[in-house]
Length: 83
Image (cartoon, rainbow, N blue to C red; front, side, top):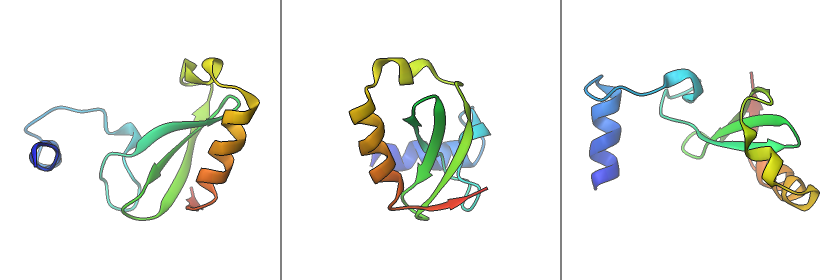
């Protein structure tokens, strides 16, 4: 319930947020980053889409292993990639 209220407040500009990684389809906040090596992706489970946001924008990839990237690749395969 609290998350729903926060989402509504953010959508209506009451709470400031970084909208650069919002879903390009529904404008809800994207989930991520999901890394494959240095490539960074975000997903929207609501719309079933994923999108590439950049290369080496987030340092979290440094703590991941090739096995993590393979799991992320499999996870991203569930989503339709969009630009």
